[in-house]
Amino acid sequence: MTALENRRPLARRCASQSGAALAVVLHVLLLACVLGQIVYLASRHRVRVDLTEDRMWTSTESTQQLLDRLDKRLVIEAYFSPKETLPVNVRALRDWADNFLDEVVQIGRGKVVLQRFDPNSDKAIADRATRLGIQPLKLQSQSTTSLSVDQHWLGLRLQYGGDKQKVLPQFAPTSSFVAEAVLTPAIKEVTSGARKRIG
Image 1 (cartoon, rainbow, N blue to C red):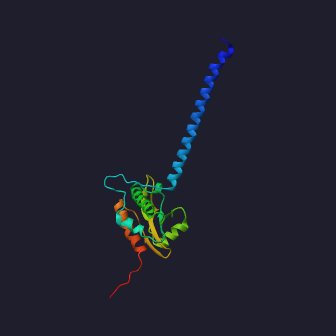
Image 2: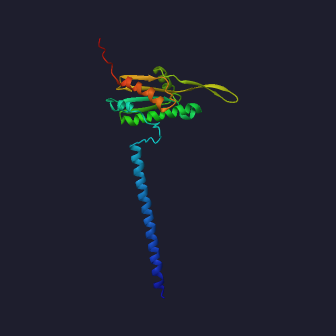
Image 3: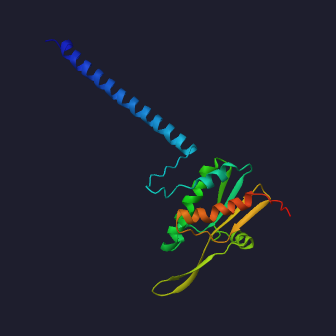
């Protein structure tokens, strides 16, 4: 066997190995492109699915119809303290509030805008919230060496069409049903015009 005959199988093996490596690299690049497209589309189009048996996270049909009839933009200003600063028992209330507000924004299909403000981070925001009538929760915080009273904010202002507004001084629902029972009538009040009385 000559040296040339020994090189041919080696060359074939090297060529097949480099081809396999190239195929793996192409597959990884294509997979990265597909995943990038999925992430891009998912960030543009949010979909929430309620898989709970009792439809705990789904709003009622009356709320959906109310939001479908909006002809102007509804801006919801949430004056919330950061979740990590809240006491543990208040964090659950904040979760209910956040989840229902996200549901309302999704049902609104672009007609409902949610703006979040942290009054604890800026005195001007805290002053504006106070002027609007939003009341902070004053909760005691206790450690082994001290006792303090902290202010936590959980209030909303609804603005419809720039000229109508409704303030919810405290929005701390204990369930999605309570969140809907409080927020839906407020939305209805701010979006409905003054009706003429006959008689």
